[in-house]
Image (cartoon, rainbow, N blue to C red; front, top):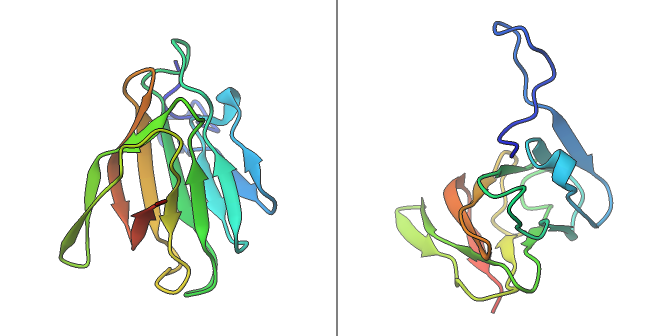
Length: 139
C-alpha cells in the first residue's frame, strides 16, 4: 500500500513526488502517492481501480492553471465512486456517491491552487478527505 511517494529519505528534505498532466490520462498504481498537478483546461484524470493492493492510498489533485481558465475532472472507474463532502464558500458540497460519476473543479470559479484529496477506503469508494475550491459532481 502506498500513501505518499517521497523524493528523499532525508527527514528534513522530504518532498512528495509531483506528477504534471498536459493530456487526459489515468493515474497508475505507482503514482498514487504523488501530488497530481493540472494546468491544462478540460483534462480528465482517471483514478485507478481500487483493489486490495492500493486500498488506503491517498491521491492529491491541484489545479495549477490560471484563475477561471482550467476545468479539472477526476474520474473514478465504473465500479468505483467518490463520496464525502467539503466546505466551500461557506456552503457544504457533498459528492453524489454514485458509481462512475466524475468530480469536477468548475472552470468559471476555478482558482490557481484549488485542490482535493481522496482516499481509497473500500473496494468501491474514494472518500473526499479535504479540499478547497468549487467542486461539483457529474450529474
